[in-house]
Length: 371
Image (cartoon, rainbow, N blue to C red; front, side, top):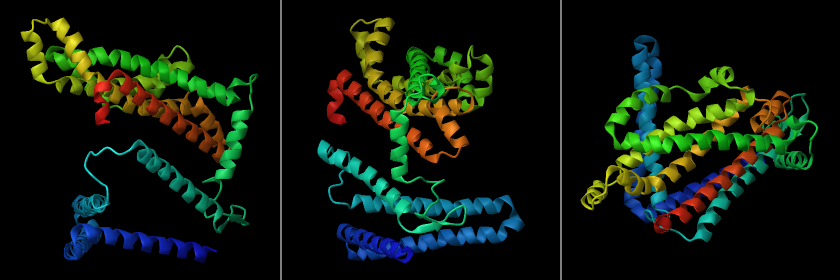
């Protein structure tokens, strides 16, 4: 069985290589394809030779060997990026910033998930491996490390169908709603404070000089490092995640809003002054509307970080929440329950992203054509 699996993988790799070579020869011509291929091979060999040379000299020149090795890795990295760009650019239908039909867009998106599920099923059900107790188990990977899709579905159905009203810390719906409320509080307060302060700091250098050095000092501190302090400062242990979310979102969102303000065309400001607007009117009727599309986009990006800080805080210092559920599942090696929780977070992320897109299209209809 394992021989068949490796044979299938080899055949798939050969088919992908032949398909890639065909598109490259069609896009660049046979002559250029051969020249580029040989050049890339030579550069790759040079990069690996530099890394090998650095490993030989490590005991003699110390840190300089590390720098030489990094140079080799950088050459390989840059060349790999160039090759990927070259392959993608010759795929039929690829045009810079060209919109595609919604059906095609969502079809490609679904294909990505289907491909991941196929790989997951393949490693879960194909072949066999030696289990932790010495017996043969189905799949290429131990189920304690990667549960099968059927196990995750079964556990997910159980988690979503069973209620523990008398023990709310075990009820998945209560834990999920607790996490959502914490996100709304921490993220909401961060956005509410970052927008006006970001506008002022981006508009007036005096305000920027007053706050930016302090905020830059805090911004380079990992938000998770504040968990012990948040536990001490918070009025209750349940508010620790919201505090951490605020710290993790506010200082980074502030910089993004300042950049949006700085990118407002000067022509808009000069025109508003020419028409007789005062500074308050410029702030509220020119700068504020001009930056709001960028603010919504930045908030959409930062809410993903908010979930990261939420789970980190709930893993350490919370008695409820989806992070607490993951922590308990990890303690008892319930990997399938961990997977269900992570997948639920991902589904919430997709829903949140869609809501932000709808909000963007509703608030800024003149920008629909560019998305």
